[in-house]
Image 1 (cartoon, helix red, strand yellow):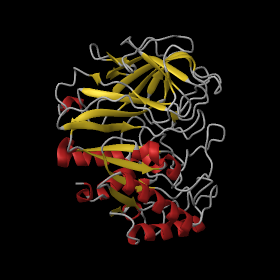
Image 2: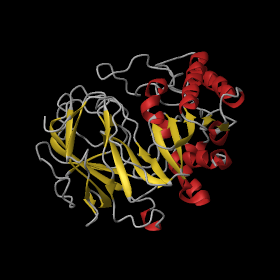
Image 3: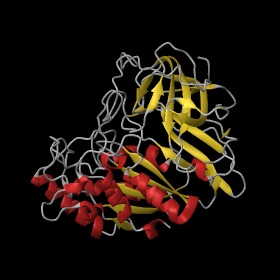
Length: 434
């Protein structure tokens, strides 16, 4: 192997914080898989890009577009092989400012190292942090021209990756070279990246160096947090809209990151692995360490889940979901001193056209769980998304929240559209997150 094998499941190459500053997580993609298991939205045909899931990527370069909620002149990247079955070697890693499409703005593309080396081999089940990388184009973290811009993270997969750890529902366009194209991350132009994807692969977190008082809010959830039926490349999931509200009120003192996975459940499935995957990813109880507890600077969690536990595919009892919530909240509080955990009520799916949802029995369970979230005292506060989106005359979503923003279709009466996500974000009492 070209690089030292990372054998530990939780590997971080330490980079010391500066006085009065600390690492905080500014972007997250909760991983699952392996590819193609998952619930992607608006995905192009990838048969020419990844001919076989068993081989995965073959000697090709990814250019992933991600949106940091806070920029800084010092950044580090986390890569995951959580659901791989063989070691994966990444090299030719670069980070720069997206210009447009797959092109990187001239002069911004910076090499990324791992323990001073240009690449790293990550064992199955492991993740690894890069060294800190300086981004000279970030002159001032609050410079307004960077707000909403995307970071272009490029990396080369040496040889075959094998089954790929990924995040299916990025709802953001990224780019990939053809198989066998080699290492192209250093090139700023787009000529080597003819293929597009609406998913993220291997990269699962970005940290920046920020003032020590900066707070990180994790939005933990399922497809309604992941953004199904919001606008492709529109950044209008409810966590995005909440982040903009918080920045308008508190500046860059609070960051929001999205730890949603489409189809996710609180308590199920009982077993999840690369050999036995599930489209909705590992349960919240199983993925908590990687997707919340291991992140940097977490001070609050807003948790919206439960509807998939009650679907026809799972049909869990309410007390099992409540028990899962108690377990997760207890583990968060045991690990993160002073953290606030906000429970979000589950929005209606009554009458959904989705085959797994929409029954009166599911809705009764949903209402029972919402009473628990509102009144059990488990949570430090409540984000009442149900009240913000419910049509009391039908018991389903309000009519204006149903049409699908991503594909322009009729909507499924399960996932709120852009307008619904905005209403959810606007309903949150910001004082809960101060």
